[in-house]
Image (cartoon, rainbow, N blue to C red):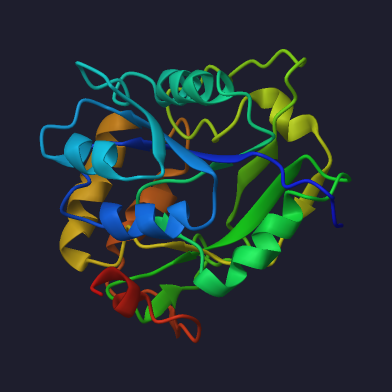
Length: 245
């Protein structure tokens, strides 16, 4: 598991209008984990670009003049991927602006980047729901069922292709998912549903992007608005302390 040299470890993130949400603490936590952060801004209209450019761990930043995500998430992520691999990293961590790992997990994550058996690492996603003390555990949202591949060993000499999906295309090119995979038990904390006031807007956004449920079951989208979701108390790091410290 150990290696005499620390691999070059970069994070990549697409953002849009994240300045008043979780961006600053997410960048701080991410910056303590990786060697550098690459950000593609999808035409933000707030001061998200200023926050990104000012962060010391952001080593590459590009802003689009018009939003790309509504037309094709795959095109947006492919562009972000290209910006990242041009820096020739060994490992790439693909995260969103509302996701974090617990601070004490840093040594475990770094150890994953020093092993040589696996090229793709998945993590169970804990969707915080309605506040920062509970996460959702019913059908569509249980961490054991909802894993995300967000750590990949980049192979410079390999040709990569993106799946032509307008939505829910994954965070890496198709070839990344053909490499040996490890299912880690390190929680990936998703904060995007922590504020109930945002649920209706999220539901409407998904329906607008995928009205026929072509890329995700419509029942999954509808479950965003369930009035009594099954929740479980979070026993790990106090997320509120991180966000508002």
